[in-house]
Amino acid sequence: MKRVGPVRHVKIVANGFRATGLLLGLLSLILLFMFGGSLFLAAHQQSPPPSHPLDIHIYGIVGLLQNGAIGLGQGLNFLAALGLWLGVLVAVVSLLFLLFALFLFLVGRGVAARTGWARIAAALLAVLVLLVCGSVLFNLTREAATIVGLCMLTALYSLWVLGWRYRDA
Picture 1: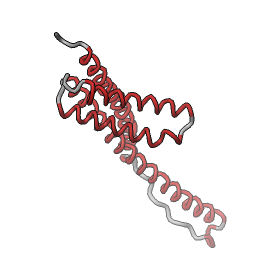
Picture 2 (picture 1 turned 60 degrees about the vertical axis):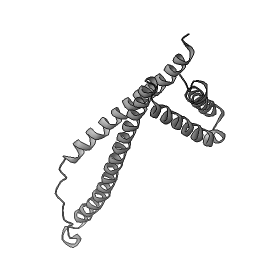
Picture 3 (picture 1 turned 90 degrees about the vertical axis):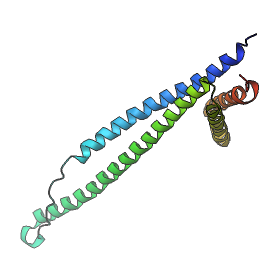
Picture 4 (picture 1 turned 180 degrees about the vertical axis):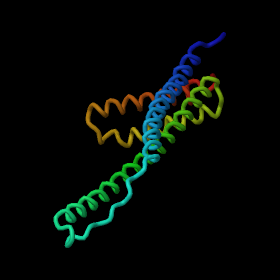
């Protein structure tokens, strides 16, 4: 006699991993294209040639204003370089999240195909979610703790399906 219950629970967990991978991958891809496109455009812009400070004794107040504008421009160039560096950092982090999303999707496909590596990886990810959520649970407001509690219940359900209840399915 064929059991129907375990297959349904395994499909739920597999679809959960796949949906999480797809959602995280889509958001990471959008972020990567936004920041990558901005960085591509910013990298191909030419900066204006540097101007030299004027002698205050010759040009007076105009030289003073010119020198102040040069100093302000150099400060703004520093902030622009800092923003460019942060943009590169965000693009690299979004690429890492995209790779993690691909891993989640592949784990979901592996769980659906009942491969051993995917069950182990899914169980380790569920334990990781439990550890992270458990460490931040008591430092949150009631509303945020509810969401974290739901994440913990989802991880516990995944462990129940993958580890104990349906290990032979």
